[in-house]
Amino acid sequence: MQRKRIYHERGRRLAAVFAAWVILLTCPLAAWAETEAPGGSADAVQTENTNTEELQLYARSAVLMDADSGRILVEKEGDKILPMASTTKIMTCIVVLEQGGEDAVYPVSSYAAGMPNVKLGASAGETYYGRDLLYSMMLESHNDSAVILAEGVGGSAEGFAELMNEKAEEIGCEDTHFVTPNGLDAEGHYTTAADLARIMRYCIEESPKKDEFLTITQTRSYTFSDAEGKRSFSCQNHNAFLDMMDGALSGKTGFTGKAGYCYVGALTRDGKTFIVTLLACGWPNNKTYKWSDTRKLMQYGLDHYEIRDVWSEVSTDSVLVLEGVPETGNLTDKVTVKTGIDIPEEEKTISLLLAPWEEVEVQLQIQKTIHAPVEKGTCVGAVEYRLGSMILKRIPVVTEESVQRVDFLWCLRNVWSKYLGNVGIFEK
Image (cartoon, rainbow, N blue to C red):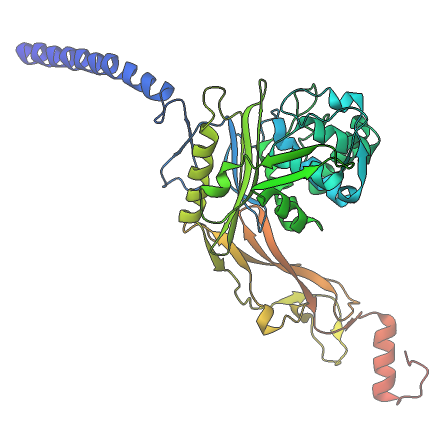
């Protein structure tokens, strides 16, 4: 017995030593795996589907958005506040377009002429057409052109920044603030990848000037002169993504020493439209990181998301307990309900971009109790189509008939009518 205990003790010690060696050997490997993600310095991004492979992105902050619904499909620190460099100019462009500024002629101030490179090289005192300056700003990212437009439309760069911030609030951006029209580094000039995607979505989907915006940002080259015809200029579009993937729709690059390389782009294919935004996507010499991340996110969207119709009929044969009787006169304590909107058959559809692992939940929510009197058509609940916390559609549920309140006057009226005849004194 003693010998067995000795052997047992020796076995425990050997097992402990072996476990210690396993931990020592594997810890350095685990640490290396956390610090050296595949693809150089790219970081892993977990998508909503926990069963899919992790995306490896260089950008510090990134978003893939469904442009039709505005739903963010994939994100990496999408709400992180960061500078956005010249991607700022998409907001400058849309504000100028919506203010009618493309048809005006603008003088060049000494302040605008003093902007750093990249710039058009306009001289103080010269004049330019707004439309030409928009192409200069969006294709070549000229900083002086942005300020010339801002001063002409907003009275000053500061005044124009107020217009930009008003538009951002209107779009629904909660973590964005503009100080400059060109995106040069400035205290208090920032956005998030999520907000930047919302701005781009507005520009290509919702703005009354979306067609003009797309025409400008899709143009490969453009030539123009100053308003007096003394100088000529030629611009080339630096958005290389336009020629990288079929369906590339629009985009804008950006770089400053503080912001790093930034990009916002859009793609439409097979009825699907995606927006990708990238902030802090490398510094020199990593200029190509933004194209790698953009292609990866766009392809992920194309491969994993399809348009599905999630409409389904919901039974509304529910009843509500109440105190009263329907106008039919039948003594009952229940009233039937129905969906409050008569939807034509051809409109019974809810198309949405979904991944295979995503399901839309249909919920029928109705009050358990309602007290008379109740008018016909009273809203008592709703049918909700939900994707997670997002409500896709909400259809009201209403009562099918009116209900009178059972009180002393109602009882007296009905007794009088039944036994004494209708003499009109209790008519409604």
